[in-house]
Image (tube, rainbow, N blue to C red; front, top):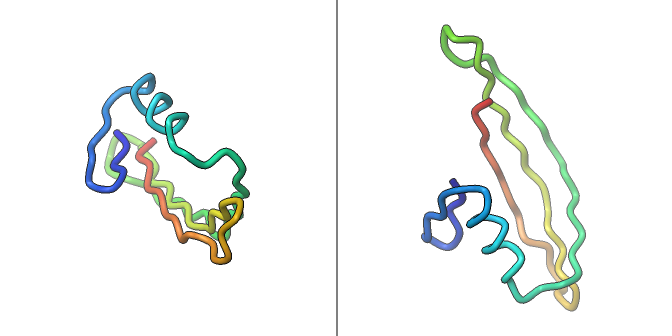
Length: 70
């Protein structure tokens, strides 16, 4: 699931469609941290990623974070 500006988007095809529909074409991603922690008894892992997203024509980068359960 992707949450973008309060909108919940389910399914990989819907997520790709949303991301490719966004108005920016040029962007640069800088990952600053990747932290992993064990999760639960089933051997899962939580992965937290943070970084900066620089969009073409913008002076300041956007801060971003993502949490995945693997």
